[in-house]
Image (cartoon, one colour):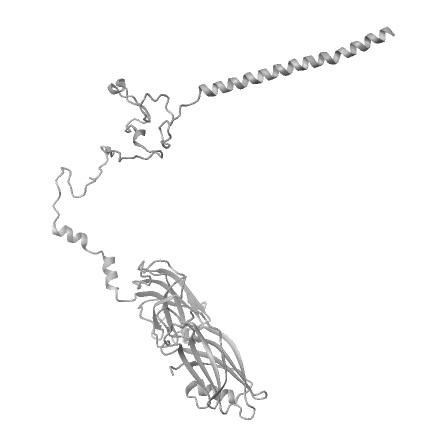
Length: 442
């Protein structure tokens, strides 16, 4: 039993020795770590730069100089030895920069106006730099200003004279016409325009483009691209109209309309020109032409405007269908701009109004499109004999002095196109017939 006791005591001493070694190792590691931390802190303290007021970064200037020497200035100072000799440096030839911090505020700005720097302009002997002061010669004597020199400086250039001559006109359009016999195509080349009238009062320019229409059919309509901020646009665009026989060219006419593009409102018309092709011979090739741009013919817009209506009479059901399609060439009801039109439809039996209806309001629409349908019931025994329809084109703006833009009366005794339209629907029931009607003031 004795040997067993000795072995048990030996095994009990092993954990104690391991614990002692571990404690000594931990203490040593902590000591080493503390010593390293102290060394790093000491190095940071020794290398710490002195506190200094930050002005702002300047190229070639050290923000933290090595020594202040009691003078709060940036840049190296001249020593007595440096006065006697010059040293070559990358910044040789530049004036040294000294910034006094005492004259600056916390933001680095001067509290008092600093002295102005006088810069010396150096030039190479091979280069002749003109004098900075106009009117003085090389010797410093002032040159005499003669009346001829003053008049020559105030003389307008040819471009200015041209614009002054064209001030009262609308410009000139340059184009050419040609017929291609192989392709059977009539070709129009819009080259350019000169001296257009400005539409923008602030910049005194326009954004012009041209609409071209072949008359009298009006089937072929094309337009050029928009050129920004110019009164002398150079379009240089060619339009080919195919399927037009050479014999028909003399019966056509070219209608050019010059407009100015407006992003926020309706495009403004600068002018137009009409070119009949009856006296133009295209058998020999291209013909160059130019025409003056004149004011737009506003005879179509005269009066109170026009209204497009579609009427249909159903004799079996004794109903009258009135479709208010659209209006055009409406006058301005006030000085603020286009009117806000709507149409009021009144149905009369004799002199008595039996029904009334109205369309929706179209805001700021000189050419409104309504497309609204109204159905009226008629007495079966009378039909359309004593029936009449009154249409009033009104302006919804309450500030307008004249809310009634135009009036149209359709009936058996109505004159002009209104009476013809009414008689057609009586003679052809169940047929939808549409016509334009000119509006009257009363």
